[in-house]
Length: 147
Image (tube, rainbow, N blue to C red):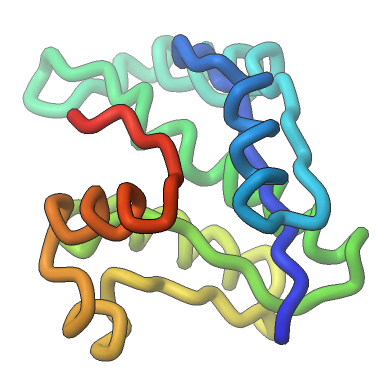
């Protein structure tokens, strides 16, 4: 088996990070990193993007897209600290987030293995979408805020 170490980065989203940490430990994680990345995100990612007038179609400010390389960077740093060469993310196969996460990980460490559940045939055969995941969580008593 594998030891699961969770990482969640606060880049300004409104989340209950304490609850996330408790849930991760309750569902089997051996360790949880909850890190405040807001200052680095603003200074090194948001400000440069604003100075460059970076906006998708002239109006979308790319906050989510800009956060992915920072989150991947910190995830790779944690993997190295924990002496593992495996990381994972939950970005779906529908958008570009999966690409942002993975290419950032590979750029930082070409030897890392990035597990991508939403492109894994076995995972996809078991979970067709959000409803299947919610049903799985309910079956195993994992609280989920369905959206």
